Image (cartoon, rainbow, N blue to C red; front, side, top):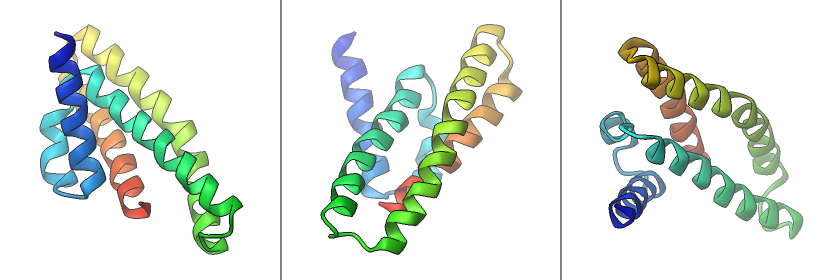
Length: 115
C-alpha cells in the first residue's frame, strides 16, 4: 500500500510541477487525502526555493513580493479547504467535497503559474 501511495504522490507532483494538465487531470486525482497533501508538500518545496532565491537576490523583488502575497493566501486557505474536504469525505457529501477540491485546484494552478 505504501508503494501505491508513493506512486500516486509522485504522479501528482510530476503533473503539477510539470505544468501539464493541472486543470484537466487534477479533478480526477483528488481521490484521497494523499493527493491533497501533495499540493501542500509542493507549496513547501517551492516556498523553500523561492525563499532561497529571494534571499540571494536571484529572484526579482516583484516576483518575491507576488509569491509572498500568494503564500499568505495559501497558508490561510489551504488548511481550511483540506479540513472541509476531509469532513465532506467522512460525511459522504460529494458537493462539499467538490467545492473543497475546487479551492485546492485553484491554489495548485496559481502555485504552478508562479513556479
